[in-house]
Image (tube, rainbow, N blue to C red; front, side):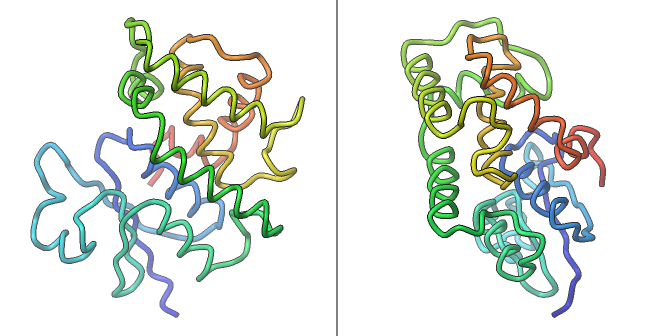
Length: 206
């Protein structure tokens, strides 16, 4: 199969979904081109981009003549087409749990995502305290993370998987902002943030 890959991301480099797709490509050691999309200028609504991606969403992956949007779909496609090195656990139940976690991080915790956008990680912290809804979402996130991570563990399932990056970024909405987080989860975030693929994103490496 043609190995020409292009990843389209937001031009501000603040989308968690773009970061997760980017990390998956880096972890799979796949060469790819990077194209930025200016959302403020509505480049994602241009006919050519919408035709390419079907829905006009960012991030998007183009592989040869095939375009695909939605970060979870992109990551699963990469895993199917380029299975090694894997970004999901090999154990089927652990893989299912990783995918459950991915889906949950995308669909829940709305108040936390609104009150602690990724700009608190990539730009500057917020000086506004969490609302009652935001605090409830933060508490739920911490509870789930603590239940999945063994004491002293750097990874969810013994070895790194893409769900580690996704969970660490979501926790980092709190950690980077100085909100209270248990120390063992802070250490987990720090360990994940030091990963070369994440550091490449922070340096905005094309």
